[in-house]
Length: 508
Image (cartoon, rainbow, N blue to C red; front, top):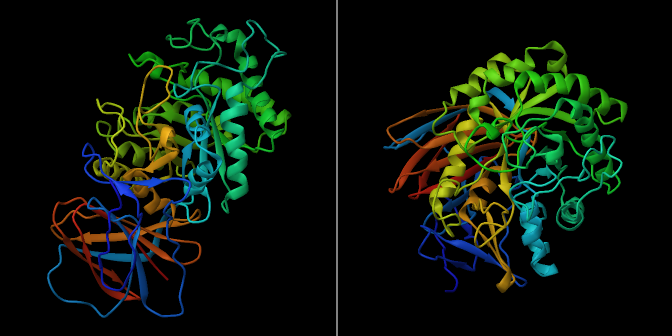
């Protein structure tokens, strides 16, 4: 118990910060988590351009305890010596434009935030969106309940209410979603993009007749379900909350698997017909057609064939802006599916809309897990190197058990709330995603990076709208590695990367 002092000169230059002052390790995870309460919470460092030429800043986190540790240095002439890896940067070769990063405002997230005192609530929201935050700019919001809700519910609970005369937002929206979305809007300097995703309509609209069965939308309710979307957006607009995008269905094929959660199945051809003939016309009539439509919203197995059945239709192609993907089966489904999809539809952005740890593990919440932080960093680097434009985490805050979840489908989160102590814990995954979300601003473009050497240092680079270059480096080895970063204009710099560490290198 107590603070862990970490003051290390990590890289060439001067050390300025060491990360959180209040941290602990349970011994169950393989690293530390940082403690935030009413009197203390660490902040993510801001990096600004200086008058001094050829300078760079490195922000680092590591398994050994560094959390957003800051070092500065200067580029020099081409350096000699032995390096584990040499990385060459070419800002003249650019690829996809980045939309951003974020998390999800589930009922469970709202319940956990609400369990804290007002000052600690403010710090938690501020850790994601405020000054000194990791600067999320995207939020996914379940339309109705998800498994991370205290109960299954919809906004049309009255059976056969075809015209949705009894449509009403739930208590969960009023208590756990809307208040925090409003507070986020007041504290952020970002333009936050909200994405709405439904899990299931009320069972009376489905062929299965229950929340979790292998049901699809009954044909006689196709128009009712389209109207349901319109009413949802209109109710949120009354609360001064506007959405940037929607997905027609979370995990449209999951009902055909053994996984149990409230859901609804969609055949791609049926979804295409529903989008073009029912949803799009009523959204346009209601002046809501500015809301982007993103299809997929499931595992990579939907790529490219399932989405192709929708986008091959000219009318549907014009209506759809992007393709959403979840990460849970990425280790068994080839990343080339992203490349194939981009090649087929280069004008459609690809966005990761749900990712989290603990899904297939017995220990759902693993406080201080660096291996899970590496999973996050690996996913972002790998998918962005294959045309992905944004990455959204799942729950923004869960309790010590990994819930609440009405199906007991517990998972981990970047922030874990300990309500009894009126505090919350920043997991290593919080810092991992922060290395990207803080420094890769919306509108940045991926650039060419060429890596040579024996060490597989994961690498990705970006050119920001303010002309800053950002390089992310991930050392997954248990040994220190040396890296030579070579910029054709600035020169070279030698970086020493500690074991099990992630770094954001920023320079102008």
